[in-house]
Amino acid sequence: MARRVRRQRGAPPLHERPMVVLTTVALAGLAAGLLLLTLVRTRPPTTLNIVLFMTLLLVNGASAGSLVSWALHRRLHLEMRSLRLVRHGLWVGILLVLYALLQLLRSLNGVVALALVALFAAAEAFFWLRERENQR
Image 1 (spheres, helix red, strand yellow):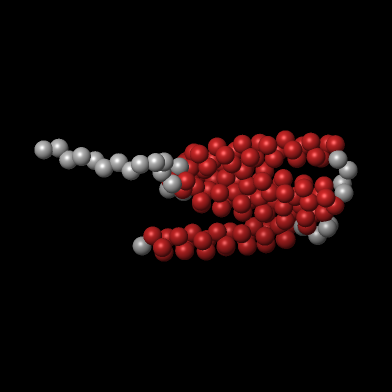
Image 2: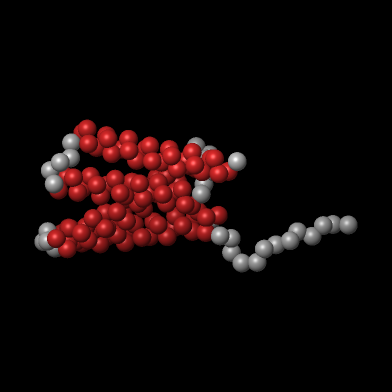
């Protein structure tokens, strides 16, 4: 007698479908990149435009970071989780915005850039260890 496999109704949760999340992130990054290009070429550097520039840079950097993270996870045969890929992208986006802001204030140098990378790497290591501990 064959056993029947019980199927769940509806779509699987979003964290189990990384390609849907990555497609959405890529489209958002493309739109942000086009808006960023238009903003830089046509608008004067007022305060509102600088805030808009930083926001679009965050979205564009997060998109690119998520896609690079996906490629690395795929290449290294690591487990792909949508939230982890988006988190990696957000780290990259926030880092780019901090670099742009520090450059705008004329405070960016090599030591500060490396210190920020080390800070974000330590934060990601903390999240990764916490994830690993919760899986047990």
